[in-house]
View 1 (cartoon, rainbow, N blue to C red):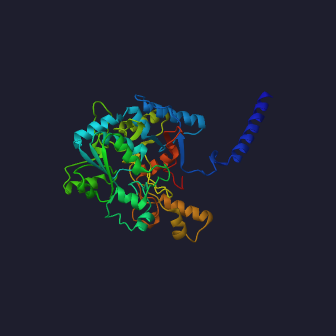
View 2 (cartoon, rainbow, N blue to C red):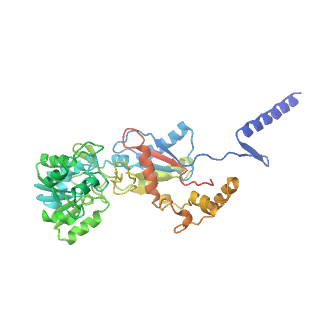
View 3 (tube, helix red, strand yellow):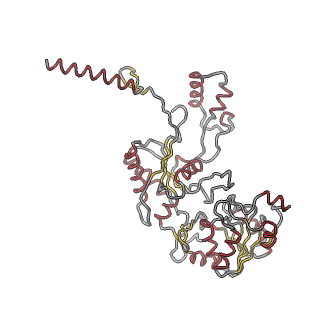
Amino acid sequence: MILNLLLNIVKKSVIIFNVIFTNLNFKKIEGIYVTNKERKVGTVSRGIRCPIIRKGDDLAAIVTNSVLEAAECEGFELRDRDVISITESIVARAQGNYASVNDIAADVKAKLGGETVGVIFPILSRNRFAICLKGIAMASKKIVLMLSYPSDEVGNELISIDQIDAAGINPYSDVLSLERYRELFGYNKHEFTGVDYVEYYGNLIRECGAEVEIIFANQAKAILNYTDCIINCDIHTRARTKRILKEAGAKVVCSLDDILNASVSGSGYNEKYGLLGSNKSTEDTIKLFPKECQDLVLDIQKKVLDRTGKHVEVMVYGDGAFKDPKGKIWELADPVVSPAFTDGLIGTPNELKLKYLADNDFKDLSGEELKKAISESIKAKQDNLVGNMASQGTTPRQLTDLIGSLCDLTSGSGDKGTPVVLVQGYFDNYTN
């Protein structure tokens, strides 16, 4: 009797089990339940909250713990080829990679002599450049500040291109004095910061005890009419600018990556990038771009593998690379988007354009037939689609630049408190 009761319970349990799994979109194939529900989510980007990072912290352990705790708390699991991204800011903070304006001044004076220094093509930024300019001015008797116009390298406008047209000025050849600039364009405050950077930078230099002369030009050689000791402050065109000035007879030319590329009296430094990628920390201190951090990304990758069995990719990211259509600002003020990343992030996407396939190769198909045809094309795609018309329109950029831009937008630069970003499903496609 007891045995029959137990058998009835088992039979009813099987019935209930079948009903539940059928309702959950599972189907039974040869006695095994298989999901009958397609994934409806592709790439997911999650900001991961972490403790406030200080110098000397074990960043690899903190990042690993924070990601795994977030997964447990929010109910998701890590998968192979997930990407863990860490903002460069907390890497530099853990390294203690800071320097003072006095350190900048000492290095500038040693390398440029302390007399009249031309400072050309700086970006317009209180956070990125003003504190660097402070250190440069402290080391010099006079600064000849040469600003590009109508905007700086990353798109911050001094004036609009329409103002240039209306004034009849040729920005490719005309060199303007401050007086001429004011006569033509007056005072112009930045759309987002409300700062007239011409006035702001001029006052900052004078407050540091240096004389200042401001000119406006877009040809690097124009500065040689004023001085032959120059710091070219452009970021992505710095090598070309330095070459042009040296070939034109400049005595000393330093790019920002030549300043604080070694420690000054125990200061922080960046051997590869110097002052490039630095940010204001306090009124007299900068946080430099992180030093060598390849070991960090490899350490995090290993820690995650040891604890979860999942092989994730890891990268450090700074500014994303994208342009604001309203303010016309190109975000990338760092020398690179990612200074360190694991090997799985080398290269560019290798993707087919679904709308191209739907509108061309399979324009006569629809529904399940279309879906099947596109899926088969994706599965059969070559390892290198360069030159293939079906890949036209896909983004031809480095994976680290694309993922870093996504992470920069996810983490933001304010008070979100998510300096680590977990990206899942980035390497999936329509067939997964």
